[in-house]
Image (cartoon, rainbow, N blue to C red; front, side, top):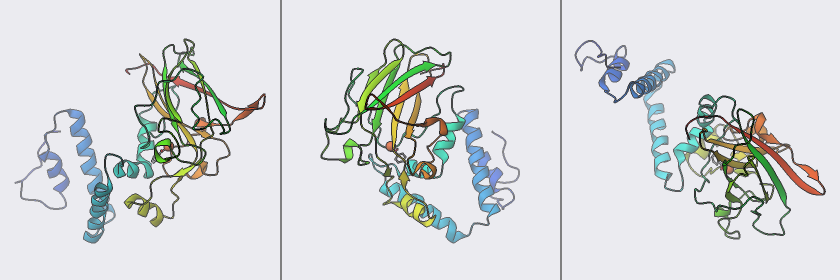
Length: 281
Ligand code: BEZ
Ligand code: FE
């Protein structure tokens, strides 16, 4: 978008400021121009439509400032804001590959250095913890298992803490990378994760409380699935019956991602089936 708004640059009034701002940008690509023009148009429309006062605008800018202030390498308050506003989930859904397993939020606890473990590994923090067998397969939209598919899985312990948050647990427990068998199958032993709250001691927590909302997330497993020639998927698996399924603080739950553990020969088992769509890795 390179059109310039009519009149001298300093002739600015509510009727032309949106156009002037858009025209002032000279982005490197048509796509960037389109996104920026859309952002400015919608922000200005919001301020006009709701007649945002100076005080309200300053409060909002102050809120964003505080999001920046509390953010660090370990904490991304802006991502959390995107999550609790449902924007992360909206993008997950609108940019989803057709026919593939539905995506869900990545969350802040993904660590790319999970140990590469063989199929059948035991991820529990302690052999005394009640075992859960997770059995799954990664298929292509065509139906067949994807040879060479890889999974990256991370979850909380029964107490709702990720291993990195719990000094009593080795950092690399309850997470792994795993290469699927040639037929796309995999399995591992772990525990049923526990529900937990998103960090609510910052500005986003204030927003949740101001809105009478909960910070709880239902218990879940995170999965990142990759295979050559396929689009990667970041998703989550939730447990049927969890009391927080209908009030997830970050809107990550999808019906298709809820599983019901069954008992087989006295062993608790969950069965998973993921589908990847062809595309660039
Ligand atoms: C999580 O699932 O770990 C998470 C997701 C979004 C925000 C905070 C935590
Ligand atoms: Fe999580």
